[in-house]
Image (cartoon, rainbow, N blue to C red; front, top):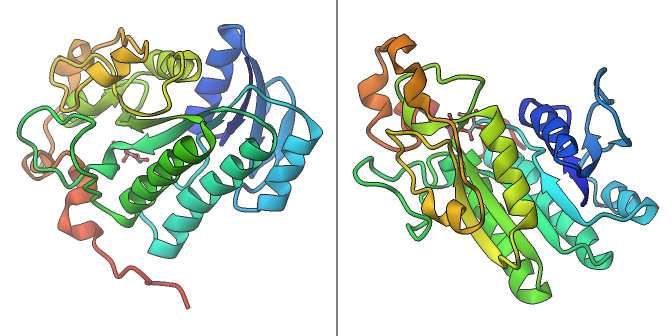
Length: 266
Ligand code: 15L
């Protein structure tokens, strides 16, 4: 497939662009920043909140799918979260509809359900329960994907990513870790699953201590291979472990991240 990857210069973006190319896809990168050294292929330096600039990319060349990874990866004011996660998604979805591109894969987040108390395994049928304005942005972007799937017949897969790192670094991450290789497997499956319509999966590895259900991902062909347990002996406890385990969003569900919605905006 020929795939446009937004946020291609970011930490997930760099792994995904290389990984998809290794799997035989033709990858076109897009980011706010110029193409990093060591990355090949066509590149657009574009801000995804600029709908005209996004439309111009689709006017210039055609794609079979879009992998939308761009976005601020942490808490912000509510307007910034809506711009970063919802406006960017809207600009891409409108351009896709205009140019008959039907597959959209989105880097959503576990923080869309982060305020869910940590009890049993969380499925994709649980209610949206964001832990932050970041999580609200992810929930709203997923809602937009659902709308475009229903209105325009798009296939739109929201990957609620856990903790993307080379290896798990904290006790929470023994449950939430997504390895680099599994991340590529996840995106490839979400791009190529036959006719998923609107679908949600949890982007974690096959962690023995998982807090999220992997079955919805497996149904789409995402079969994770790695397990954070392999690193358990080298992960040291931290003073925040108990508080981080109260809600599945961990530190994002803790009191010290709380701020007014319009803080810092006019
Ligand atoms: C995310 O969605 C964030 O982008 C990242 O910064 C981490 O906090 C991650 O979730 C996580 O929950 O570990």
